[in-house]
Length: 217
Image (cartoon, helix red, strand yellow):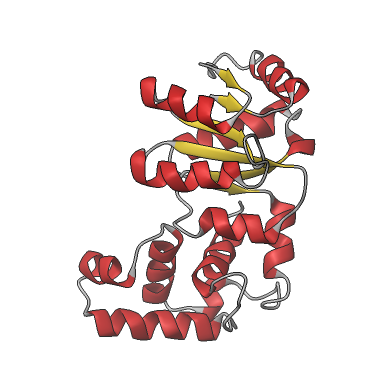
């Protein structure tokens, strides 16, 4: 399903994706309420939505992504934006990176990139525009240092869990560790990655972005 209040964007996406036989468009919508109603009636595999739509023209796309994380946890969401916004990317990943994509509108006419993004989030992966990832991680550590160099194998496992949106309690249960041990690992991960407290973007989100950058996202 595609949602954007711009007719030109909706039609542009429809025409581009019509060239991809593996993608089926099940609906085009101009506002958040009509999109959510359609999702309730016939849930798609992936929603492609603009960040700002009626009725408020603020952050409807982000709110939809947040809502679907609860109501349809396996549904992929690709958020479209005209701007490279670190704040919006962080908000999108705040509840986990799985099945989420942040795509700049100047890339939607690139069929291969658009289709690969949609297919990736449908499979539960994350796709954030590389320009945005570079912007967010550049100030945090030297680019020459890899996670393999900075973190132990156990810490890399826990970082992957963080990137998937798991809480410390969930990580402890998954890895057979005590909660205190996980908290120590997480604290050490943040320290080794040079992640200080940030009022705008949480350290867990920054850690997720670092993980995604290393995965070639």
